[in-house]
Image (cartoon, rainbow, N blue to C red; front, side, top):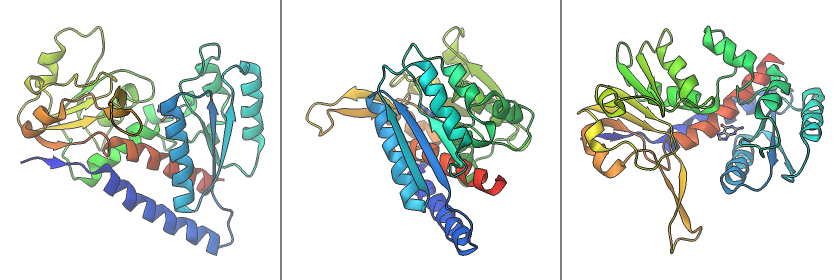
Length: 289
Ligand code: GUN
């Protein structure tokens, strides 16, 4: 029998903890934590993510601000808006939702964010701190994955961990966190140029799939008793549903789950944990300020 890792349940617990901490801050006369989000354009997934982030803030008692811009704004305009957020002492942390339109450099934008307000943990300074194990903001999805693994008491020491996908926001940072002291996994980072992906994944005790390719991880790639973390959230058409789409993970859940010890569902696995990580980073920004 396998255990379904319930990201909704864990994220609800963490939100309770954060909500209690916010009440305590207010009782002590401290300011209400304030997270701002910048959204450029109308990409469906991004709009949903950002709206959910705003909802989460309300739920735990944070103040939130959503700044929405047309996708034809210039890079210079966006950089000015970021400079204003950096300078706004009421804003504790903020994020710029990715992806950005092609004419705006994501790297330039990320580098322009004050590392002390970088609630997504994407700034090179925070990535560098994570690399050498210094305290700092952790990228939201990797942070959420590590928290799920810890709260489910999953053993990682000495385990083989295959991370599929080398993106800057999930695959690469989670590979670093899994190999760090305390997690102590032996990590292999797999990507589109990797040879014999199936053979390598088959040797893994822990599989973290973050490629955005629905059903990529099939049952023949998974060893008996493996832990499977599915980060995929691809929108696929689902005629007859209200939205017209459903979220598809990177794992063929139905056939893979029976071989696992633990597995995350999509939706309701990693997604809610990403959102709650952002709240945790914001609270840390308040504590540090
Ligand atoms: N796009 C997909 N995931 C994320 C995230 O965690 N943060 C931001 N800013 N953009 C994203």
